[in-house]
Image (cartoon, rainbow, N blue to C red):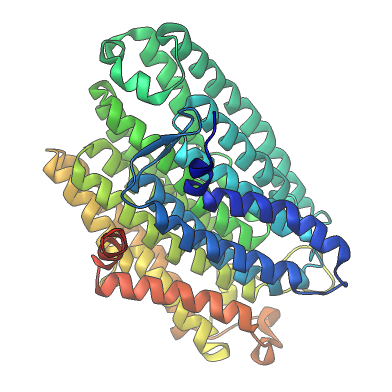
Amino acid sequence: MIQLHEIYEVIPLVLIAFAACAILVIEAFSKKGSSAVYGFSIITVTGAIAASFLSLNKELIIFNQFLRISNASVMFSVIILAGILITIIASKNYIEKENINFGEYYSLILFSVLGMMLMVFANDLLIIFIGLELMSVCFYVLAGFLRLRQKSNESALKYFLLGAFITGFILYGIALIYGISGTTNLAELYNQKKLFTNYVFIIGFALFLIGFLFKIGVFPFHMWIPDVYDGAPTTLSGMFSTAGKIAAVGTILPIILALNITNFKLIFSVAAVATMMYGNVIALAQSNMKRLLAYSSIASAGYIFVGVAAMNEFALKGIAYYLIAYTFMQLGAFIIVSILEKKDDGSRDYKNVDIDFYKGLGKRNPLMATFMTIFLFSLAGIPPFAGFWGKYYLFYAAIQANLIWLSVIGILLSLIGVYYYLKITVYMWFHESTDLVTAGYEKEPVSRSGIFATSLAVVGTVVLGLDPNMFFRIFKMIAE
């Protein structure tokens, strides 16, 4: 039977669930153009972040052993919520510009967050599946939220069809695991160590894992990412590439570490190399900013799997740090793209997401150009920004695990990324605009919400880069 104190331990989930439902009621009674839903969403997510820290240093299994509270799950949930908070702040001006200022937008975001948090707190394969599907269904709808844009509709359809196909792998994997073990409870599975060498169990786990490789964007399960990120609302593309990826990593990583299936170590290493290579090489040929960031996101999944392949304690710290740094820099870059987007000649699609549009941005909008430079330098792994330390921790973890070859390949492939990131930076500061696509942008104002959201991302990127241990010190200090 569920106890009252158990509800207290999951206050962040309760807040998010309540707000997601309440927003629909608030929207019904609010005046058109009201900011009530926007403000309520920000307050809710901020409250959920604060409430999450109450669960630090509590190793609890609650709700009939369906949920598990741990420092790792709290950390992943805080990273997810931080990314969602920045996304919501940046969304106000964007959805007004796109005429999609509906309460359902915020409600779907919060329902997806509820799914993500269920995933990272889950202690049962069925709860993981429920959380994954809740997140996924919301993502499918949000990807097609720009109903009048053909590209958005196509991205939603492709995401839905591929996602539904992958769901079959996850369910079949869970069925095999349950069939051989007699349980879906993770704690009980961890205790049945003799299963870890059973081929039926390994096949079941591999099928289950494929579903998460799809969500993370690991090669060869990445094919949906460029089209979906390109067609979806730009602020949401940033959310898909950060919060969605973090939820999947935060769910599967503890399971991989607990099972310690050494058979997968080489597979993870090869997947990391293939993903880094594919993402970075294909990004070189991109002329569309959103698609470039999409392929960059694929490469980032490869860096994360360098840490997964290492499978040591330092790797867990490196992955956690890289994910929080990645949230700030990737989300910040997507938000700037959303700020600069503007329809041309009454077109329903944006034509100025081309990289050529960023030529001369340093003169037209020096603030946004400066912020974008910081994000691109961090994504490239250039010190002193957070992205440098994230890659350093991951590659160092690989060296500690005697995967020196993997670390060397990772460093060489990340150098490819430096080229296309610096190319955009050079365009912004050292090139003049040569076409009419930027005409009239000199006087285009940037919304306060957009500036505030990107400023938060910049602060996170710079501060974490200057003091890489700050994130972990804050967690330790609050826990004590």
